[in-house]
Length: 110
Length: 189
Image (cartoon, rainbow over all chains, first blue to last red; front, top):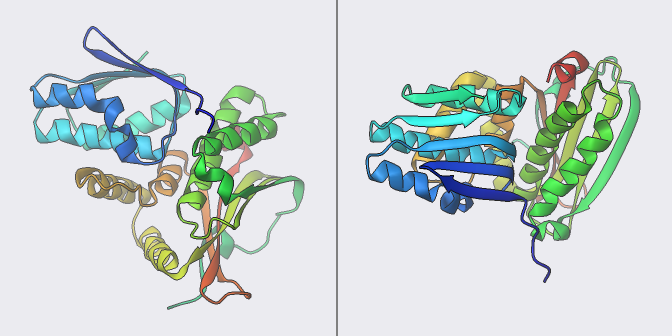
C-alpha cells in the first residue's frame, strides 16, 4: 500500500507548538498526538502556547480537538495563548468562535 | 419513523435557481478508505470552481472548507461502501450551491432527524457552544455534525437537508445536504 503524503508539520520551539500545512484528520482522537505537548503543559500547570498561522486548513475534527484542549485549560484555570493569521478568514472566524469557551484564552492575530 | 425530512434551503420554493454552470463529481466510497482523498478532492473541486472570482485563493479556500466538510460528513455517515457519493457544485445567478448526496441506513437517519430538530430550535451560537462542550469534554471520538454547525455558525451558510427513502430499498435513504453562499458573501471571504 502506498504511503500517505505528509501534508503538515509539527514543531516545538521555545515552548510554543507550531503547526503548519493541512490538518484534516478523520476524528478528534487522531489529533491527540499533535496536541500532546500542550496537554502535558496543562497537566504541569504551565500555559500552553499554540501558533497556527501557517495552517492552511483545519477540519471540524481538528476544531473539536482544539476545543477539548481549551476546555482542559479552562478546567485547570490555566490561560491558553493562540497565535493565528488574521488574514486567513477561516482562522479569524474559528478563533473568535473558540474564544467563547474560555475567557483566559489570549489570541494574537499576526 | 417519519420517512421524509426536509430542512432549510430544500424547503424554499424554486426561485431564481437557474443554474449557470454545474459540475458533478461522483465519488466511490471504496476510494475513501484513504481519508486524505477527501481533502484532495475538495481542493481540486474548490480551485476549479473559484476561477472567475476576484480573490481566487481566498474563494478557493472557502470552497475547499465547505466541500471537505460535506464530503467528510457524507463518508462518515454512509453505511454501504459499495455505494457512491454525489458531489455537485452549482453556479447560480446570485449564489453558489454545493451539495453532497449519500446513502445511509435507518439508524443514521434517526440521528440526523434529531439533529435537524436541534437546528430548528436552537440558534447557531447556542448550538455551536453546546455541541463543542458536549463532544469535547467527554472525549467523544466522533464529531456529531460539528462540521455542519461550523458552516452555519462561522460562515452563516444557507444550509439545506433532505432525507428521502430509496425506492429500491425501503431500509436505505438518500441524504442530500447543501450549502449555498451568496456571491457577495463569497467575495468578502
